Image 1: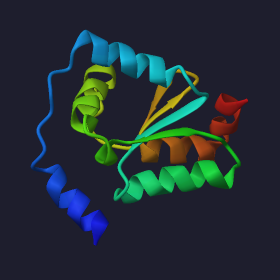
Image 2 (image 1 turned 90 degrees about the horizontal axis):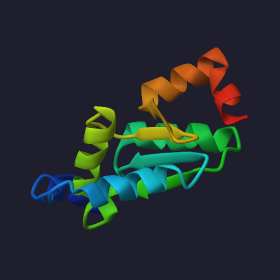
Image 3 (image 1 turned 135 degrees about the horizontal axis):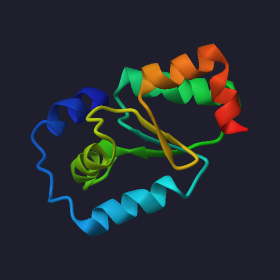
Length: 117
């Protein structure tokens, strides 16, 4: 039930302004690990992305936007940085990869392992 509660209440939270400090913090976080995934705990596409990374033994840093107080603000900052409004929002070596369908396609084509090498 907590996932449903999180999902429903996420519509009623308000986002703060996306400041230069927010954008700088996002960029710093993105550069802090080989793979960074911005996610929401209840999102099936996020779960699929995380499962893929786990299945290939890839360590990754995850930020669950629905569990932190400034999650909506960070998601708006990610929209400014990437043009992508949805989660998961995946970065490899500081480069924006896209979402679940993008990382799944990279894996299917064999290109994901090249990016992770």
